[in-house]
Length: 283
Image 1 (cartoon, one colour):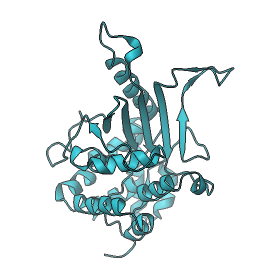
Image 2 (cartoon, rainbow, N blue to C red):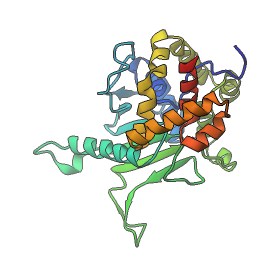
Image 3 (tube, rainbow, N blue to C red):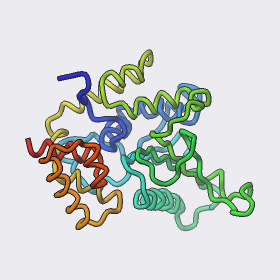
């Protein structure tokens, strides 16, 4: 196995992210990330409750009912929903908005006092962001008056964040060094990249050890290599199945002609991960 080969499934993948951050037994990993994300002191969010805590195994990893990635309740009652997207387009954004508004509504029951409701925040951690490109690693979105941006609706109760893993802005190092380290860790796909990202950080080193352990499971490999994984990527991007199937066939033909992966990606719109999966199927 060479240095350039992927030794683990990257943290930006929703299954790996759910495994690392979505289990109460590893809550310190999530606390550590959220403290860095909101630029808080270490230990300030040490007490949190993962409401949909789950240990992923070979039986439930295929469960399509696992819609929410990580739903968290803080000690003060505030809620945070984290969603992880390897592609972020219109379909993903609609799903994200539906999730947060649905849980905002569920927090209110008949007869409740409306002013007692707690804040609910949505954090979308995304790669291949096709919508809200900014120069910032972290962008916050609120409901505002178009003519008067300072006129906001419930800014203390409702907000959506986008953590754009593809943002390339040197200034972000100075704004939040801790968040920049997370960007490098989420993006790492080789051991060398990961070791450079987490150097000197004990909690991140623990996370990486757990990622490697999880990636060695045979049923995890089976999940990522199945045909449905490719189809899921297309559905998230809002691609019609007929068009997608044609692109798959074109990609297979181009692979047989020994065309470079990057050129196939440009010709078909398929990601490099999808093309690599097709290559593995033919071996």
